[in-house]
Length: 404
Ligand SMILES: C[S@@+](CC[C@H](N)C(=O)[O-])C[C@H]1O[C@@H](n2cnc3c(N)ncnc32)[C@H](O)[C@@H]1O
Image (cartoon, rainbow, N blue to C red; front, side):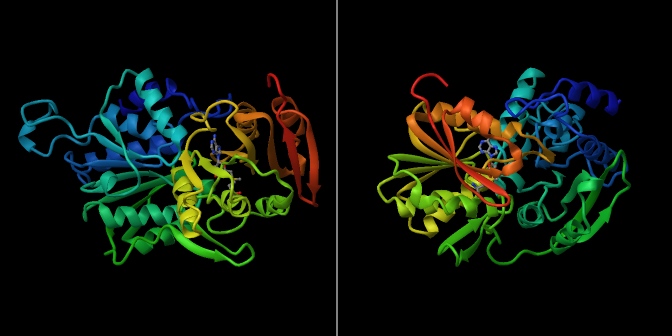
């Protein structure tokens, strides 16, 4: 029955406003395995019906909406409330969920509305509001060990001491390093049987946490003379991406802007370096990832640039007005989730075309084989190559004065 419920639910879900394509779907076998594992543990008595559930890393809402559809968790704490969660004892407690990407948060709300689900879940940052009192946490394993480290620390630190963490992933993306990270935060970590190329790791008995949370990590980049701050989920951690390093070689040739934007800012290295060499410019560092925006804010504060740089979580600058910037710097993403997909980069180039004022410039770096020039030419305007090394190309595109 659970299977039918989930199949019918998932078949009606989409990824909007994230990139949609025939080969990209809004859920995967791991979402199903995590929900089935939770239901099995409940049936076996390992979890109990009063469990308070939190969800981390839900891509487009499959875990949250699936948990709500199965309806087995989060009844009111008062056992006398009985089977009807709305009965005298009070309402069912909401499923709490954290998603790093603003597109994922929006997709969950969009899918809920499409499925007629009103309420029943709350979206929170990774921290005590999300996790306090949680006795079950469902986690889609992240790509990086640093992100897993930050999540596992938060669960061990804030959840109920009896918490059971179910961390699932596609077997091909899982490594023993993930078990090792979980073992740093939990005394018991048990891999479960794999199904349809997905596997769940069950972790419980959190290690006592002492001291301040380990993230954001802060490191001085001696080459740039810049303090870089990084939350676990941010691209490149405290490191300097080699494409970004190449783009920075052209900093002295970039125009001085009234308003410059670091689009897809990650830790905000481009924003900070540009702001420092152009003290008269106002700079916006923007990314769809909450971890990136927190990191960029911390990087600007650590370098005394907080008054000049504004950090903004947004999907492709959707909240910024048309023609409101004179310069955009971009090291575009080439992944959508685990899939290599040019759509994410083109979406940002298109957004740059809208937000640049006529005559404004987009400076971008990309892997030379990626062939972004036609899109730059079409969506921004005349594009010149300003540099090339064995791996990367840097271009400057000038926004046409009418239309895009
Ligand atoms: C290759 S990384 C570059 C990060 C940083 N600028 C640097 O140079 O280290 C691309 C960044 O784009 C962000 N990104 C991807 N799609 C986005 C979107 N639709 N809106 C805003 N940011 C996005 C990713 O989260 C990621 O941080």
